[in-house]
Image (cartoon, rainbow, N blue to C red; front, side, top):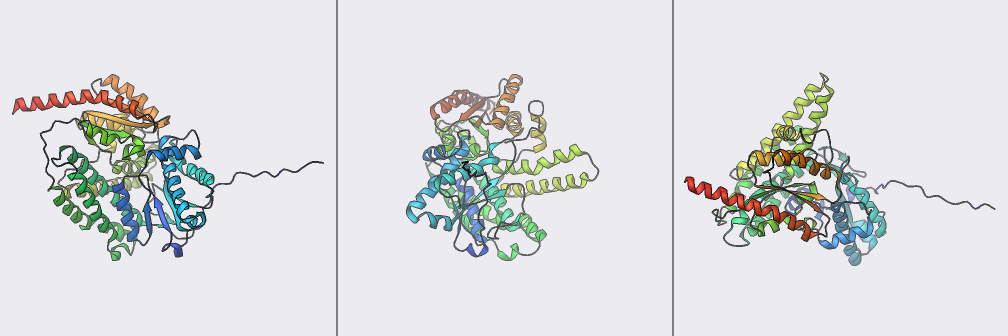
Length: 460
């Protein structure tokens, strides 16, 4: 007698609705950026009536937790971020119980598509949730290239202009403050003073975003957009921050090589165990770090459609291209207003067209995925404009887009042999090997910085 076997077919993850009535009791979890960006984003969420909480900063324990529960082929950013969520949920389940965690929290993360495994992060999250017995835990995706996506299933989270513009403005403010942080701390006279002022400034800006005037967030989309672009609300706050930074005593006569950080988005942005704390390590080794602003990535996303529209070559696309270029101008206008409020000290954004043309002979801009051509373009931009003595590119182990850029950089180095370039492959558990490779290149960068200093002294 034949036995009938039941086959359980694969079904895609579909979260339960997050309803508007739950906003007062359900906390939205998020993460993946620096604590500065996350704190200001939290202010934006609180301003709009959401309960929001960033996940704890990444630790080595998150790498181990991620390896337990997800695909062995995942890159280390995926493993770290998944393990970070796993460890938080485990600790909350131990304190509150499984059902209470499912009821009390939802997780919001960015989504994308393309060859970079970033687009599959959410698949790793759902795999880990299955392993924890939390299949009914709610996970929502935020498309990174759409400002107005409407309400999520259930209406509990509404992705509209007040939210999206608030998030972008929070990121820009955190970016310019991060620039100030890294260009000040290596030269401080009183150790720890920069970090103290930084925390005070971030808390002050958190209040600024939390208290955005509600009447300015109502009305038509054009009104909300115009207020964010033209208001002095944020620039006045940054001028107040500048006054705090002017109290930090520094010694600018210390000779330090400038090291530009590039690489995979999460690794280059992260500050912690996920990239071996390499930014702090470089400072301890006597360097000044030039951090990668998230604003450059947003600028890249904004600029990318121009290329595809230009390829189509249709007359009707001219208006669309003109609109995108106008938005690019506004974006740079806002960023430069924030820079000016801080004395024009933060670095300007590189021109996306220049990055594209610098990289084109080595890495074509139509090869999308990860940071695409920008890794090559940013290295050449820093070299040609003398922005840094050395490039440190952080790549996840087996990352395809980054592996391609490292291969392209071999050709670049053949053309520009005096470009100091340190490609660091990050696995999460090979710190000594990675840092020693960086240290070898850093030694030459120090020598060049001292030579420049002596040359300038001789001329004065």
